[in-house]
Length: 304
Image (cartoon, rainbow, N blue to C red; front, side):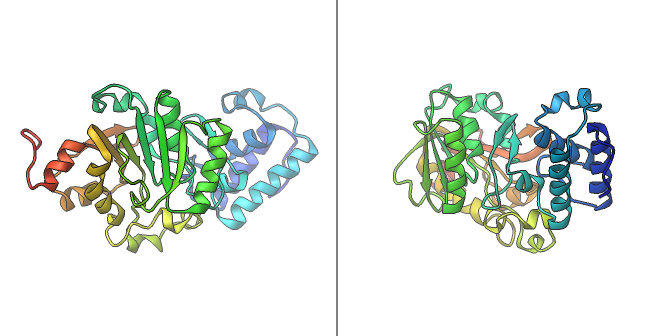
């Protein structure tokens, strides 16, 4: 990448051209080369994202210029998400530490906290929440902030991911309200019951894993691979969740673009698909009563 003139605007244009020319894949916090270049510049120069247009005439010092170039070159050469290069990700306006031990936070569930879930919380604010497959801990933290009286369990099968989550929980000073647990699904949770279970599970189909862009293959395979049809974890989740929900508890799960597969695999379950900015059909909610009734071979009146 050729060194541009020493202004923020010149660097923004140069990095945008560099990223576009390299045909990078985006989707880990940004959706195009211009926005990704802006993120990099704001991080290195300490500029709030909303202030960047007002700073385009600002001069960039030599040390910062070297950092910008080094990070941009690494992003292109390694084809890894910029979040890993910068060791930061943003979700719902909150910053989280990330590295290659965890998937980059991007769950659509985040935008539903708390207002989008209000109709499904029959007793008002939940007292106990479980974030299953917590990864970096981002959803557990956002849930704790959205529901300040709730206690949150955050579980993951990966010890490495939990180490990252522990760092983020400490950053937000939520150690007293968020408990981190190593668990394969519900295995280590005993008889605990929750008013709300959140889950962003692995749901990429086996045939698609090898075709993912390099940026996605840089993420932990364990956090992506969902088996032949993408539903390996989801089947276990739906089979066991009722045993860990309170009587009027709800399960909220992100499933990506697999809505048709989910509906075909579970035709008797009355999922409600929640609207997100990315569309409807990415996140479903279902109550305990509906899950428990199916397990007994019946569904409550008006469930279908």
